[in-house]
Length: 139
Ligand code: ZN
Image (cartoon, rainbow, N blue to C red; front, top):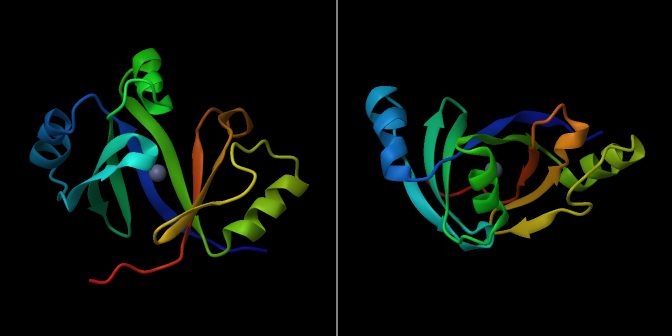
């Protein structure tokens, strides 16, 4: 069975990253690593490392995208929890065997990682993202 490694990140949907950083960076004291445009997710993301994991502040950049609709209907707040596994394909097979409802039946392949979402109806209301890191960023 695929091994669960750690919480990779917690994503929080915000209206405005600069506004949100007034709390997360300036008041709470997290360090801002960088802000990145993620066109495939129709969003801009601020990465704030916390130990081995990260907090991600996600600001929608396109009004018609899923994440923007989520913000509109539910307001700012926690969007998803990301759990890193060592073999996402194997883990998805394992979940399907257990009849867990998935949003992505197959992993999406992105630069440096593979990912898939588990449906919140299966997880007590929390959208869960699975990650497999395929390429360690150079540091
Ligand atoms: Zn995420």
